[in-house]
Length: 382
Image 1: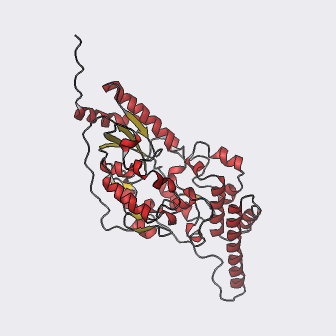
Image 2: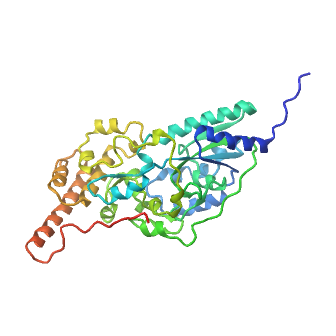
C-alpha cells in the first residue's frame, strides 16, 4: 500500500514562500486572512458620501470586493506582495512640476504597464509553490479585479494606511505596486504594522485641489488622479487652474511624504520611463494624433485615460502655462477639434491666455496690473 503524502508544515511553507518571493522581483510579502469587515464599513461610508465620483463599478461590486472567497471560491488566505517602481531620479519630479512648459505624468505610469508584468510574475510564483506542495487552489491578481488590495496588504503587514489613503512602508515608502495570490492554503497570517504617520500632515497640506478632506479620507471628485484618468467629459472649471501641468495622475502627496526617503529604487528595467515622457513638452504631446498616441503609449498604463481625455488634460495644462505665442498656437490648432470635450477645454484655455495677455498689456502700459502670469508656486521635497 503506497505511503500517504506527508502533511504540509504550513509554517515552514510560509517561510519558504517569503524567501522565494525575492526570486520573482518582489520587495516584500505578507499573508493575510480574508476578514474585511472593517474595510467594508469604510468602503460603504466612502460610497455613501459619494466620494467615488462616477466610478460606479466600485459600488456595483462592493460585496465581492469585501469577500475574496466570492471572487475565488475556497479562498482562505491572501498572499500580498509589493513591487517597487521608484526611479533613481524620482526627486526630479519637482523640476517638471515647476516648469509649466512640461507635462507631468505620474511616475508609476512612465514605463511598462505593471498589471501584466506583476500578474505574470505571480503566476510563476504560484507555479513555484505548486512544485513544492502539489496542486492547490489559487488565483492571481494585480489591480485587475474587484479586490481590496490596500486593506489586504495592510492586514498582511506590508504597511499602514497613510493619511493620503495610500499604503506606506517604513522600509519602502509608497512607490510600489501591489499584487495578490488568493489561495486555499491555510497559511499562518502576519500581523498588521502600526500607523507611523504621527502628527504629520504634509500630504494633506500639499494636495493641489484639497482632495484629502481629512486624515485618511479622500474625495475622488477633487483628486487630480481621478480627474485625469477615470473621469470622462468636462472637468469643473474651479478645479482646472489647480491642476497645473499634471496631465496623467498626481504624485504631490507622495513627493512630500517623509517616508519616501526610504523608497527603494526599482530593479525592473520595464518600469524605466519610455519615450522621454518623464520630461516631455506639452505642445509636443498636444500635437499627437490618435495613431501616434496609441503607438507611443502601447503597453503603458497611460492608455487607460484614452485619447480624448489625454487632449483634454493637456489643454488644461496649456491653459495654465505661461502666455507664449507657441502655447496659443498649439491651442488654436485644436479649436475645431472633432471632440466637443476637447473643444470646450481648448476654448477655456484660450480664454485664460486672453486674460494673461490683457494683464500683460496693462502692466506694460503702467496701469498697475500685476504680472502677465501669477508666479508659479515653487514646490520642494524638503
